Length: 355
Image 1 (cartoon, rainbow, N blue to C red):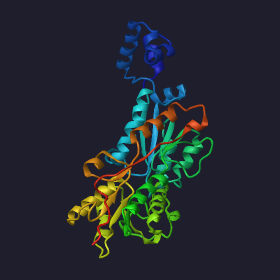
Image 2: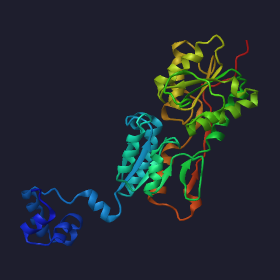
Image 3: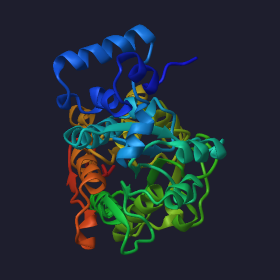
Image 4: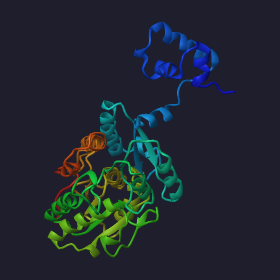
């Protein structure tokens, strides 16, 4: 029979609560009694109180659940995700909490829903999860604190989020290229369409894009480019299968190998933009001279690559998300945080060369 708390108590000749205190409140016992209890537990093979049951009695698990729609490896390989998770982890550490990473598969939505339903956490941080994913209904039904790492489309008085004005930030990029004279423009983005395929796609209007961040950034790009007379229908849209450097290069090929090659390529993330730069290099084309390239996020690699991009504070965003969950402000207005962004102009953009 599996040894229990009572088994140890009987062996030592003390109460259950005394054995429990040896694990949860050791300062309440003398060192000799504490050691006697632990020695009996080792001899009997008792591993100690169940941590899950103990945390439920305390009303606190000691973990934040971070939801995202990508493979688990994404959290460790995407530079922006790494910075964001570093920020939330730093806040969690100060509160004695950990992180539970919960990847949500788009193709196996029910498995993700079940994972969220069973997650033993004190609250959820929703990072890169589309508004239509069923797992979000589960987070709401569980009644746990939830913070979004982007500004939701619908914001109520109880909504907690930390994000940026995606449209306004992307508008500055589009406007920058418009002022440089670019009129033939391509966009490289993931999540333009539901299918995870790479290549040109047709999207009649940004409103058709299901993924919130992609839709908002493309709206901003289009509004900025409109300053130069570039309409939505003038854009060449190239979908990337994933947000990766390799897929950015593959998607860019469809634009760069055209006879009417674009003079500028806007990427919705820096990772995709770095792939575009790789595709330029493979063709002997110069960024900022032959083709201008922009990214979004300002990950560390962007500086070395000379990439023009939007800077948003990834580590700070993660830290604030953690604080909203673990130290929720009493003022509802303080639970909705909009962070500043900056256009960082580097060598990857330049004026259109007139020939």
